Image (cartoon, rainbow, N blue to C red; front, side, top):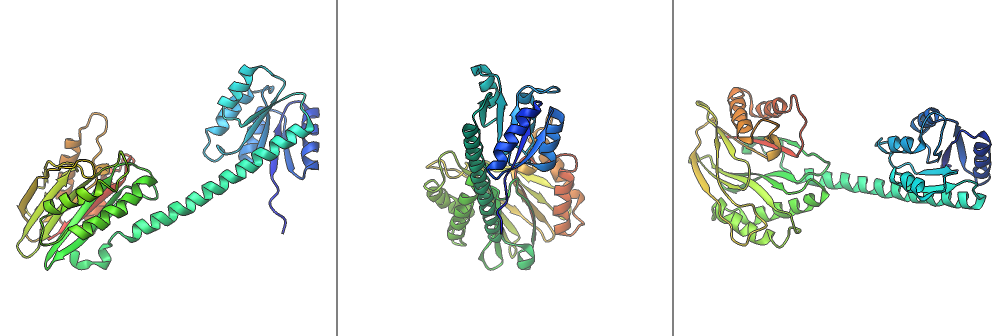
Length: 370
């Protein structure tokens, strides 16, 4: 089976130059395309997506440097290597071409061996880059799949009586949620956010989850458990990273809930009757300070009451609107959804929040019902 043959597009208004370059490349086994002005050259790049472009700087209808910038601004074409071929030999022209995104600059009159060597080199580099990108894409997909696998699903744990909407900004996000059962009739619910929106935040997420499972027990309060988690997490997180979280321990037998916030957005208590309110608490982020302080709140939770835990991506303020206003609006939205099934209420709140905007961060909303 013949391997895929690289395609080189030659864009030059001098037809003799185009024929010469095509002949040189054909002899080396490459396929070629030709365009004789800027408009047809750009169209050929979009239509055929060649593996490499040889581009003249001066074209009758456009400047090659402007064309290069335009192609590099297109996400689909940004990795296509562009080599300028020009009679301009001054350093300023070469620098301008490279600053526009070209990978190389060949001056006329050119030598066959030099052009062939440069084309071969940049095709090889481009192929290596594509291979790296494809490998990273596979690893990201695997990481995202692994991260999803460690998140508890409501349909697999009906007795936990929770629903969740999780929208990572990237394939693998820094936000996560968890549900634990430290005792009979007692459930722990957590929403956490590892600082950073890149893949580097995904691995500490797994470490935080493991620490929570080890230290959130019925023999210790949520506050005490988080102190231990903080001590260990300081040795795990990379420099500059930290975690925030909101933690609710719901005792369905006593109708009480203990809530702790570690530098996180407040939880919302939405009673079956009455208005929803945010539970404002103070607390340090975890993973940074040797000594931390958390405020633990104890509230009554009647049957049918709901708790909503969420990440800050849900309440990020917009121009002219503070986060407090967004949280207050969220409380009213939770009130409006009190008669909906919990899963429908959670979906409705997130959909309403982003009906006219796009999330700029990972988004988690967890609803819990007594």
